[in-house]
Length: 265
Ligand SMILES: Nc1nc2c(ncn2[C@@H]2O[C@H](COP(=O)(O)OP(=O)(O)O)[C@@H](O)[C@H]2O)c(=O)[nH]1
Ligand SMILES: [Mg+2]
Image (cartoon, rainbow, N blue to C red; front, side, top):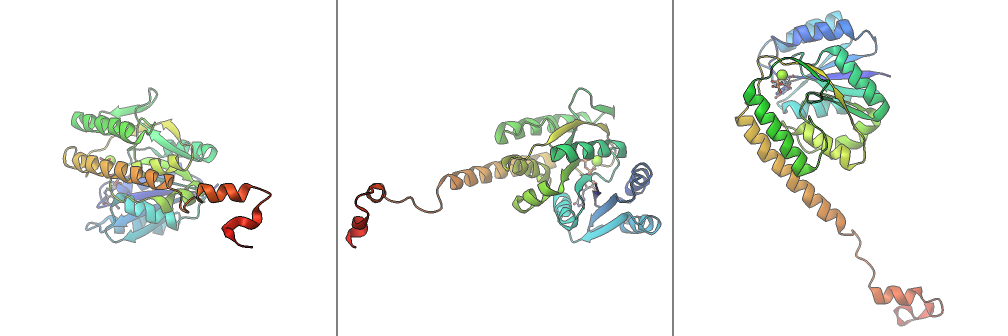
């Protein structure tokens, strides 16, 4: 099965090189592609990726206008024709062997997501306490508001099978940091099973996510997703075609008076 690994990257000149080195070394399959999805980088990220692409044809770069992490992942997924499509952070927090395990689970189940909160997950570098706190609060809100059963919606390593991507992608509406939640919610609402795979996660310095500002924005985004989902569910309860009037339906059901329907022959 062919696997495309999408790496969203925005100004990652210090982190993308070592990540591509380790992924290229560990993922031996010649059919596996490393699709770096860049948007509006102002540093040397594109040059570094181009250098890897010259040495290894499995490295592909897509350059987009400013779309945000979710936006570039969606666009790269739409362009992929691999059997399995996943994404992983450009900073190497998810070791390549872990992504391959997640892909194995996705092949069987339909989709799989990395989980840092499982008892057998391994986190050798402690995450900053404020980040841990905001992340736990966000996960709690996701479970309460959207009823999602997953312990870790935000881990940046997820893989889906092509049939699931094709079904879920057109229904996604979020391009920002809520992208993961939107993806999981739509997949669940459309009846796709997803496996949670305990992962090794090597937390990296240099995060672009602000624990306070972005968590506030994500909270507001989560409320929007919740409200949109409620509206969708209410709308879906209203039949698209108005039901026939009960009296007419009863007359129509009577076998001995069909000619009286509408009062005419
Ligand atoms: N293309 C693109 N990638 C982004 C953007 N924001 C974040 N990313 C990528 O998303 C991944 C996770 O970002 P990171 O700063 O490590 O966040 P954290 O690990 O959640 O703290 C990295 O690969 C980033 O380069 C963006 O606006 N555009
Ligand atoms: Mg990171």
